[in-house]
Image 1: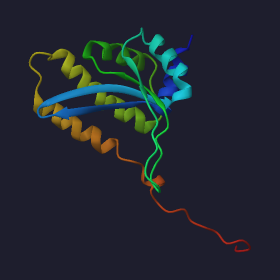
Image 2 (image 1 turned 180 degrees about the vertical axis):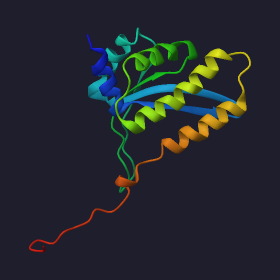
Image 3 (image 1 turned 60 degrees about the vertical axis):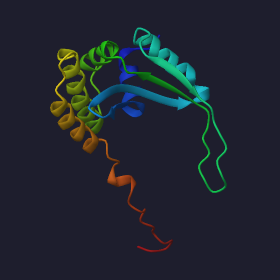
Image 4 (image 1 turned 30 degrees about the vertical axis):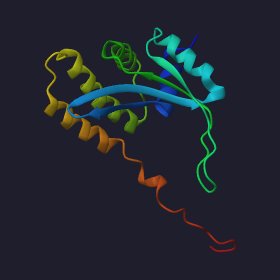
Length: 156
């Protein structure tokens, strides 16, 4: 059995708190993806979260030469709004620790809360504003996009 702080720590590094949009409809989801041979950890996380959500298998495939190779993977996703409440309850009680992930979670949680409280009368403009904020927060860190500085041997 996983401990709550283990789940938070694992999710701090691996989870996605995000959304998809089709027209004026927003789908919110919590997701974890691991290599196929790590499926057991996703099953343990799903069990910890009261078996909400689903685990999907993604088959690996060969890509054309000089392209990426897709390895087999396991993907855990929670997308039903009533099941997302289980996720928010956990992270409200055992908060994420990284600043960026915590900021992303807080905006995503506002989206979940808005949909839960306004299920039949969801305000598109509110969700759109939160989605824009979430998208901005989810941009890759510039620290990983800059070229590394090389130092010559013998230089001071």
